[in-house]
Amino acid sequence: MEHGKQVELIHRVLEHLRAGTTHMVEDESRLPVAPYLQPERFEAERRLFRKLPLLVGHVSQLAEPGDYCTHNATGTPLLLCRTASGELTCFLNVCRHRGTRLVPEEQGRRKQAFVCPYHGWTYDSTGRLRAVPDEAGFPSRPSESVGLVRVPVAERLGLLWVTLEPGGPDVDTFLAPVAAELAGFGLDKHVAYQPSRIEKKLNWKIAIEIFLEAYHLKYAHRESIYPLFFNNVGLVDPLRPHIRAIFPKRSIESLAGTPEQGWELRKHANILFQLFPNVLILVQPDHVSVSTAFPMGPDVTEYRTLTLIPELPATEKAARYWQKNIEILLGAVQEDMAMGESIQSGLRSGANEFVRLGRFEQGLRYFRDELEARLGGRS
Ligand code: FES
Image 1: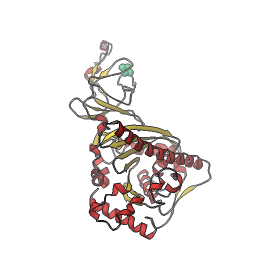
Image 2 (image 1 turned 90 degrees about the horizontal axis):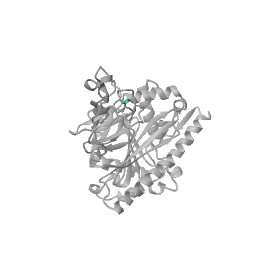
Image 3 (image 1 turned 120 degrees about the vertical axis):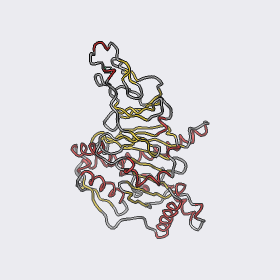
Image 4 (image 1 turned 30 degrees about the horizontal axis):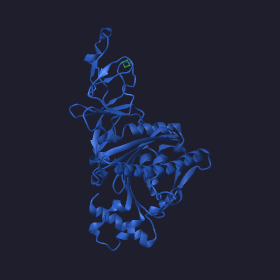
């Protein structure tokens, strides 16, 4: 993020603090409850996901030739590889014989080949079928014509994006509204540390929405991270189809009256980018957390987090430092998810036909307006 933009955002925060206000829109609004519950809605959203660039990893997870990782949360089993020549590839993780999951583990490094655990058909990291045991039984000679099914994959901003079906935006067009700001944080120069994955009983939209406002900080995080922040002070701006939110820390007040040249926003605020539909990039003072919320059912979500740090810890002390940071983040996430699961069961009760959004909960409005527009409806 350019320094001028950081200064502009800090001035906006300081002005709200002086006035005792927060960034708000004109009016409150409502969201209907049904889209959090309906199976047909879940199916429509999964279809939409298939046409959008989906974040499935970080470039450091495929740093060396032979590195591979798998990803199952999109609803389509994926195998991502770095080939011997350095090319990034992605395939359906499905054997072309009778459909067995070719690679069951989450990640690894293989110099040689992927051998199907069922009958031993063997593929290389370019997807080519190299060997078929007893191929005389297959007069069609599959080793000469069959390979793993390719999935389009791209590396942008140090992140790995796949598109499961054609017909949607290309990845550069899609990321353009946030690309310059995110490029400034050098995500491609980080390494992914301790990936985590949790499954929660809530709709994926709730897993995104709980991070898009500062209204809950004082109550949901009273004993954990709230002491660092203000009560319900934030900036939430649409960078359509994405959103940028700034949640200032109390230390930001110390900048008032100091030379602007020394101002650095990430030291005094959590900077959150919500990339449509299901990505949350949280920029903190010395690291970045990248999370994705994948719908697994109308009320089941897989929430994955990669902690991006400047380099792998070289000492015990450094490892303890990053471990502590991860625990703090995941502790706050667990508090948010507990609220989210509570919301999900509350919505299912029928108590509310709609939920109410305050004027400072505009992030949820922006997110849902974008989603509804792409689904062809209106929330
Ligand atoms: Fe893979 Fe048979 S299903 S070799």
